Amino acid sequence: MTIPDVKELSLREKLQIMEAIWLDMREHVDTCPIPPEHRALLNSRRERVASGEASIRDWDEVKNSISRP
Image 1 (cartoon, rainbow, N blue to C red):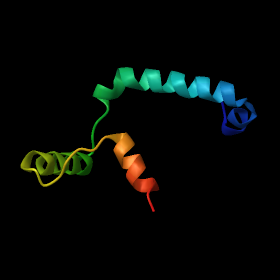
Image 2: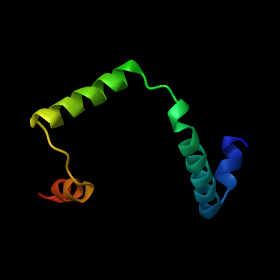
Image 3: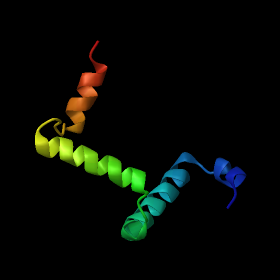
Image 4: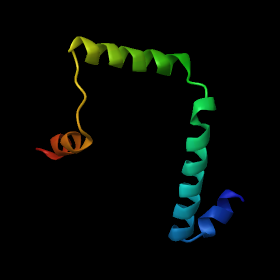
């Protein structure tokens, strides 16, 4: 399937394909290598949360804070 083929699909068909791709990717996520710079960033963020310097916020809380003037 080419990009022009995908552009011809209905929105419903595109969403079905996206869902199938995500479901397939979930099964293989553990085999995907994590780049060292991504791992370093994640470790840094975990350390900040563990030390109390940062906190984890709920997605709804983040969305609400963004929409505030």
